[in-house]
Image: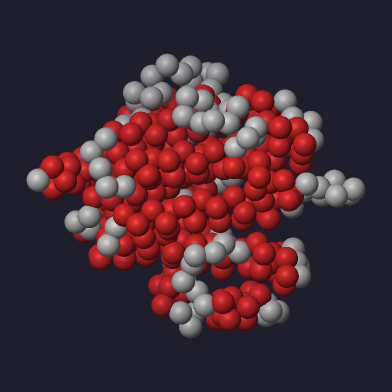
Length: 348
């Protein structure tokens, strides 16, 4: 009885929270803003983000601070829902924290590679400090890759990154590191799903996760093959495991000569026939568009609390990413129509 009650609470609360998402008019108003401060002020005065943004000064806020505050709300929402989701709530909470940690490690690596690691401190998410075992402040003090390993202490992340120490030329294999970190994360997630769920719950969770992995691999093949002309061996090592696309199909994609051929191969699969219907300017948008569509569907129709929980988090992340896209578009003075084309939620 307790389990049934908890599940019903999660379903009700998650759907009620999802009902407070940004409206088409909110997006229209945000696209009309001219500065980061205007975006922050609008969100604070007119949307569900008002509470988490209550203490900011619009005239001083920068992009990193705004993103950190928005993601703080996401973490708070997750904690509120996990309190009732007794089957997978605690496990998914750990997954959510670890994914945030990976994002911070990758951001620090990008800044290190760009020669400005000290910039990390300006975008450090303070909301994560009490939830992580990583000393985030130390990531702003690194001068080289060994410093990065030292900052990660005795965490599992250090062991994952150690094989990627740069050679004499100093090149950091960012793609390889990204793949290794996420492969480790997904391994944990799929073990949790297999151990703790069954039947239709397992199927729906696998659809959400595996379709995203499949389309991420597809987009990664296109980017590495067409844009960077990477060799097949490098591309294969950069792919994420645990997807549903067959290995021989991935090998065919890797060994083609053009984006059109890669797309044609994806069109032979069920996931490809659905995903390629989305309008897009570049293939990197497709995984996020498909993920949002799947999760939006399951929030409305799934009767399984863990599915609705993870779907709510993913759709909220899509909304936050859209807000950050608008902010970035404003910073780089892109035309409103150009920014709008890049948005995920409003174009689904």
